[in-house]
Image 1 (cartoon, helix red, strand yellow):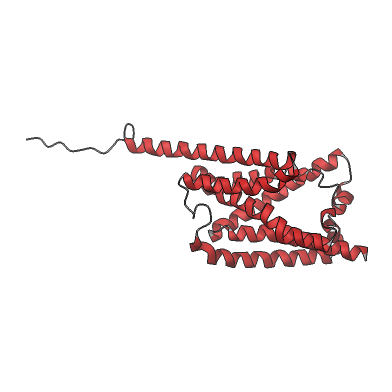
Image 2: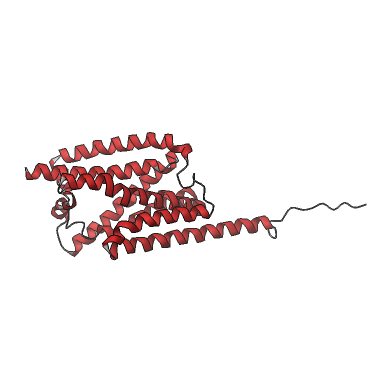
Length: 256
């Protein structure tokens, strides 16, 4: 009497490897779609209408989160799990305190104070509106949802931690190419440092990409360390929002 033993699927012909390959293929498709949405969003926000520049990024971030949830991405993969809120809050407080200390030193020193002279924040009232409403709702929260939430999760599925740090940081830097056009012309400190003309504008763009890529690396570290996007949101806001308030204070002190 012979007994037939049911064999598990072999590595060459079994179903399990096929399912793993299919899952990885879907992860690549998800990543390609997310990047395509981000590129399209950036172009629409910067090269169409004023209303598009206000609404496009927040809408796109919400769409990306909803889309990846439909694709089976967990809240923890998006950095939105309530389990990590406490740890995220602790890292947020530490990040904001550090940035505020650095900004305070920056506006106190004569050499670095000039780099805060941005014409966009020439009034304290305008800087307050920008730092408390426009920057968080139009820039910081949507960008963190898109990059440290959705893009982080999709990159981690495809390449793991190294891919998240390398590709995520690079893409975040490239995201700021369009927004850095005319950067030197609107900042008195940068104009004095880099000069004017095409080369100065290119230098400003390259510098902005490098700086924001480095910031993206730190944001990603905070996201992974805390498990939550609360910490990168806090650091991102403090860099932009505190910078806007500091610029207004420097303009006010200069004019008076």
